[in-house]
Length: 180
Image (cartoon, rainbow, N blue to C red; front, top):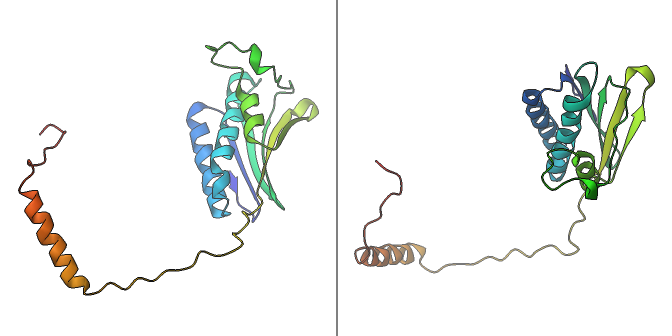
């Protein structure tokens, strides 16, 4: 189920690898709709990490809800699952260089302004992160528009075409790197 009120979007899903990519595309599309394109990469990375944690660790099931909400000048992305166990954010320096897990929450922390976990008793928990959605400050002085008037553009174009034809005959013919 997807809801799209003006400043809120929620998606309920099973946190399976095939669904994680779909949710990432939904989040990206919603941020484009809200004109928050600069946040897409960080939001997509964060939601991917949180959903991967649900897929790998949540018990008894993988059902979860992803919510994105635009609150004034902040975007809040949260994932609610039914596992009451809270995630443990370890020290990233303790993770082996060849380890395939253990960096997710550190990555979320690195790309966000803040993140956290809210226990919801027996109904599970919510893991969230926040991104700044402040508009970029416009330049103090606008870039001047420069108009250039070319003299006799048609003759100049013909001369360039003729010149390039002369040079073309001196070079070897182009070949494709693709067989066939």
